[in-house]
Length: 459
Image 1: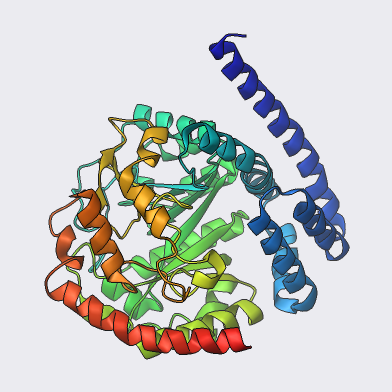
Image 2: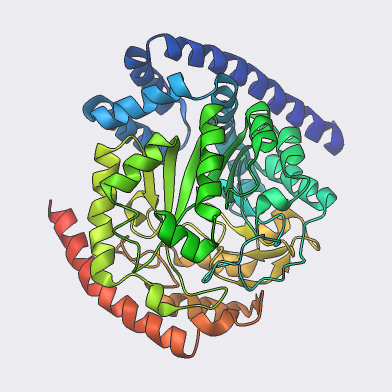
């Protein structure tokens, strides 16, 4: 058999597996809907047995324990079956369970065995750098505002991602909903699941209707707390536009979340019972919490949370997960779940609107541009390889980040691989006042983190 015929045959086989898998899984979802109390645990047990990835088996076991023992977790999952639009639910869950958890691992493993290059599970893309807001401290604020991935290029990237076994796509920006081809691309590549970070101001009735129709998109709307703090950072009137967007999506049964930049000024407000309960009532199903990192537009170290505040957030995050109908993830304090940093092509990497390939949205350095190479080629770059060789950057998973927790690690990787900064001022985290500040803050957090880590391991 010729090489081309072999590739076509493999793709047809993958399509057949996916088609059969989706058909069966949709029947399973309908079965679950009839009696979720009984049938959800059964499904988790089946998934735990058939997933080929050991870490997924562990996560399934943890999820089963939480579902059976925690009323909040139990009610949260049951609510998804009763409150999320069936088309949205089926499309997203098929893409996540069938494509990402069941089919993706074998395809990614095959590529890794053939090329020696690790393939991550998720790809983060900025389709455009354009944005209608000018938020102080925005991590993407120093990128050019005139960059955009041509639709042909984005289409090629998404096709290559599927060939490699990457079905989880995250989009950011800029404001992704300013990209005119966004929804068309998601609809065309409907076997991939999309989470889109957005400021929410462009989600009108027409866009909300299209989100419901397409079905494989979960918007994640940025919010800073109550009206005063949100409008102070994002502009007067933005808070009301965010709430209106949430209402539109909630009414249509769209699965959506919230993205929160946690600062020294809002850390208690955004994790308060009142605010979390308010977001739940608005229909928010998950929160991604990002500690403020001094990169991008007008970096301000005064906004970074203090070490004792970070310790508070560590405990508060666990309280929210155990007591609220909400999935809450704190990217810096949840290193235990991810076993340290997952950037640099380990579990994800970042493509900017200019095409630069960065290890992380907060590390604005690149050695490759996707316009010049294939996705497979850029994943094998030496910068990413050293990232993965060094991970985890600390034996204490509460210190996962090479920017704010172990900054010397990032300096060494940049020195060894000589990547170019992707915007002016990107090197401020490596030298100068900001870098000196990060060294001192990392040392202060190390003492507290080690105490928490020792206490957790003793328990």
